Image 1 (cartoon, rainbow, N blue to C red):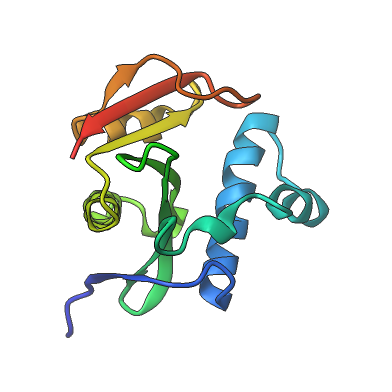
Image 2: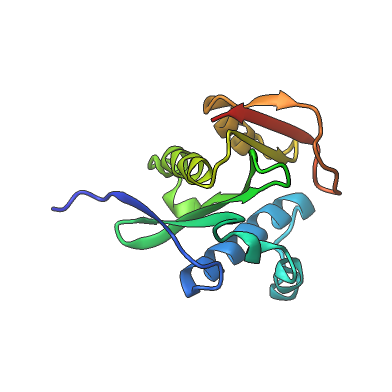
Length: 162
């Protein structure tokens, strides 16, 4: 029997697997915030003009992760105005694929992508209730930093030298 492995590669955010993963990501984070399932219309609205189009070089990168060939996770990095910082965004592993090491490999791949774009520091923002995500970030050496941006779902900020 072949061993299942993770493979991460850059993909356009409008590629079919990337779109499906972005929809699942939005449904997951919005649903946990609202404490109910997000509707298809709410997901459509949330993805409209969400800035994902910037996740292409030289302004960013979007990675899709596959486990055993199946689309299982995604994440992006967005270069910030100063050209030395990249923002970690849309980090997601589908629930059926969690616990298989993909999140750690995804984080490493996203950090490599940020370095390749010229970033020397990675920053991110998240919500306090996303406990598993926050644990992932701290496990990878991210520490709490002062707010570098504001928004309705931003409650804590992290950073790390690359």
